[in-house]
Image (cartoon, rainbow, N blue to C red; front, side, top):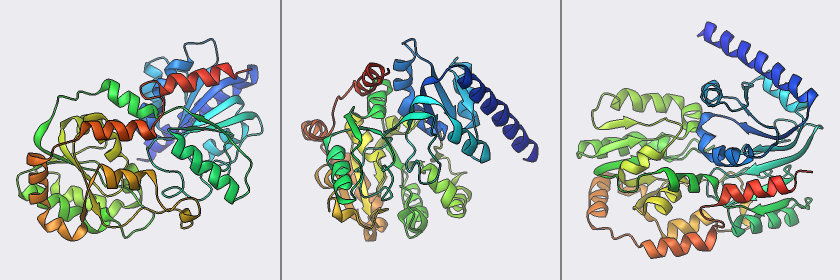
Length: 378
């Protein structure tokens, strides 16, 4: 482990020095920052659209595996780790547009004086005022929104908190377009359930309190279970996560999915169970299959969200498209799942109407974003 850490540090030190040295020669047009390989499919279409033009476009990542993956595909990529080297790079990065899906820039990591514009894009289909921290988007210059509901929320937040107005471009949702284009909608296993709990700052959450019970109930009743924990669960709830693995990893009907892409799991599942995860919306919008929400505890990371709006996009989705059950019904979960799989008639037209009501530029979001960036690159 020590030798691996030394190797990682050495690579990040050399790669970061190389990145900063080359930017002294010529300022980069676009830099995309990725916290981990889990976000690759969120930005890869935008990246591919940008590198078609004669601009200097680079990726910096805090994930060594992502670095190797992108490097072998000839992208201009640099590994900066997650420690002091990343802090140093962020302080001195020089570019016209710094593009990321990491919230709270300027609150935790400083903004560089040599960066002209900080651009945020979303990696989930949620409202901006409820599951995010209060100042999550305050310090960005440009926001790529997935629809007008996010625009309205950001504008309301600016008014409530007397903030400068950002430039907002309603690009649509990059990952949804990538998922729709690259997934097999016909592949399905009727007996397979995808359990994808969300992460939460609150330790009293569905995964911590009832994750084991949910998986055990389904496995005992002959379902195949794909368990896909959010990366933050693995980081923040490590002991509970390891308890789940110890208990179920040798069960032939249990599959752990911690891959960067969640496409395989969604393709195979005939039903998805979650509490608050946005994978539910992606799953419904692309595969048109049922989602069961277990109402254990709402995900609220901004206690003053009601000052913007008491409702949210995800609340509306739960109410109009999803199937919600009480956490008290977990003992009956196997019966509910079987009945849902056997009898649920998905209303494709209703989902399409809902999708088109809230999302913009469906199927062309990354092109719209790239066109804006290229047009405004002066």
